[in-house]
Structures are given as structure tokens and as C-alpha cells.
Image (cartoon, rainbow over all chains, first blue to last red; front, side, top):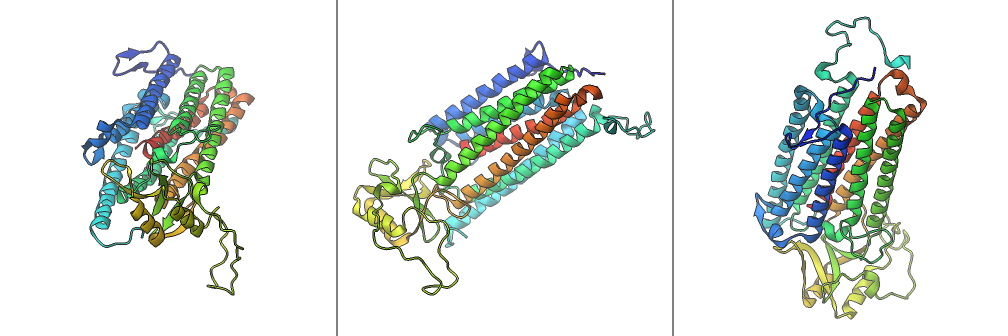
Length: 129
Length: 327
């Protein structure tokens, strides 16, 4: 009773369609490898204009890293963990909940950390308490 | 394996247990919920790391200067390459895992066996790499001096190249007196871990060598650690220096803020523990595949479930990689 599960074989919103699930796996592997190589190359070179340009309190380079990480996380979840083939309700229950809670926590903690940084910088407090 | 296909006698009824809401079986859905909760645990740790980093944002170590080693390449500056290698190992073991899941859907037992085996090998290589990474980080590199206020100062020559303590510290040849309870504060015993040089030896060597400068934790506007002039450097070492730090542990870290080492050990350690349990569970499932358990059961869903966990471990590493090594 091998139940052949239906796989959605198209990525990039249907622009790239693979012949079989195995092909798709290797395709996604190549995509993840390219992204990782780009990340490592940027991490070694650290182009000056990306490091010195700031956007929303972070270096532009760091935004690029975070963006590429989220792209990688998307393809791991969607194609390796087969989220693409799950029902929308399961997908939303898992993804939306997690994304919301993580964003909430990260925003609060980073604002708080930045506040303490300001306190250290502008007041007489020992460096390491 | 009769135990796994329990019949409740209520099949066909809406709440009889025979239904798979959201088209996911009970086990698979619970694996997803476990992954959600585990993802939140990891986010908690990473968010705490971000909090501490923002707190000391202008004094945080630069990862490119911390992780510069590659096995068998001594003295060669190779930032990032080693951790990139580890990332590829983990991504590749994810690929073999998903290939095993795919082969399982088509009931190809021999292929599942091979791919599960490759996944386990990948996991073991990753764990060994991480052990090496930790050992290198703990052993340290150039050595540094910690000030009375707990900051780290590192040594450079006039060209801006890092200089190791062993290159300039003047060895003190007098007898070393072992600390005993009678001569001194009674509750302070002889330290268990000793550094290669004492602070006095480093100080004497530093004062004798005109070519040396000091670098502090604070960064300039371009994100480089500030380098002091010779006069300021001498003043810093003589007035503030208190203790030699070699390598990193939970209280001292020659690369910079001790919190960096704490979070590094804790988060990569927690992730490594996940990889370890993943390898263990993979091995059990591999064993069952070899025994033909899932062949008899009629489906390879267990491989799919353990695959979800394994991919999750890879997913976490993608974030750890970004926030510890890139950003």
C-alpha cells in the first residue's frame, strides 16, 4: 500500500518545473549551494559600500545576509520538509505562528539591548556587570 | 510490528483516530508541532544572543578574526572556509535524507538504506568538525590580556599584524612559589588552569619591545577595533592590565567579550546536541530499514518523520551560521 504522495514540482512560482521529485531535490541543493557560496564570498570580501551603508540600524551587508538566510530557510522548509505539498491550514498553523512569535521576541529584545547600550554609553556604569 | 497499527474499533467515525486531519498523520503532525516548539527555543537563544550583542554592539568580536583556522593549514588565515565546509556537509546530508524519504515513498528499500547511511555519515562528519572547531576556539590563538574592568586588550606590531604572547613575553626564571592557604587569602587556592605566561612576564616583554601596540575592544566607525598609540598602549597595560587570557572558556575569552564565548558554546553546543540525537535517531531508523520493519509495515513514514527532524537541524544551522559567522 505504498501511497504515492503528489509532489508539487515547480519552484520560483512555477517558473522552473522539474521532471521528477529527485530532480527537484538536486535543483534545490544547487540553489542552496549557490546562496551559501555567495554568502561566504560576501563574508570574506565584505565590500566597503555595503559595510558603510546603514539601513534601519543595521549594515546593508547584514540585511543581505539575513535575507539570503530566510531564502535558504524557505527552500529547506518548502522542498526538503515538503511544506509545499502540505495543506494550507497545516502550513499556516506552523509557519505563521512561528514567524509571528519570533519577530515579536526579536524586536523586543533588540530594542531593549540597544537601550542598555545607550545607558552604558551615556552614563557612568561599569563595563561588565 | 503489530504494535504500531493499533485498532481502536472506532475507525470511520470522525473522532475515531482513523482520520488524518490536514492530511497529515498523527505522528507527522506531532513532529511538526515539536519542531515549532524547538524552533521557538532556538529563537529564544538566538534572540538573547542578539540582545547581548546589541548591548555591547561597539565592542563585539569580529567573527572573521576569530574563526580563521582550517585543519592542516597552520598559520594560514582562512576565515569562513571551515564553517562553509561544515555548512555544505549539513546541507548535503539533508539532500541524502530527502532522497531517502523519496525512495521510501516508492518503497525502494535498498535505496533508502544507502541514503540513510550517507545521512548518518554526514552527521558524524559534521559533529567531528564541530569538535575540532570547539577545540581550536578553546585552545586560542594569540593570547590576550584582560584588564581590571574585564575588557580584553590584544597585541599588534606597528604594521597592524597580530602578535602572539609567546613571541614577546619575557620568561621569568626565578622560582615559582606555589600558593598555599597560610600565605595569603585562605579561600583563594592555586588556580587549576594556568596560562603559559604570567601577566608580569607579558608586561615586561611588552615594555621591552618598542614595536608593540595594543588593540582594545571598542570599535571605530568602520567597525575595526581601535588601536592605541605606543604611549596609550603602555599606559593601558601598566595601569589596567591584570591577567593573561589564552583561548576561551565560560569566564574569559581572548577574542573579546566573554558573552561571545558563552553564547557560542551554548548555542552551537545545543545545536550539536540536536545533531547528535538526530544521528542517533537516524541510526535507529536505518537499523529498522535494514531489518525490513517498514517494508512489512507497508510504508516508510518513519523515515519521513525523522527526515523532518533532520531538516530542522539543518534549518537551525543556517541561522546559527548567519548570526555567528556572517553578521
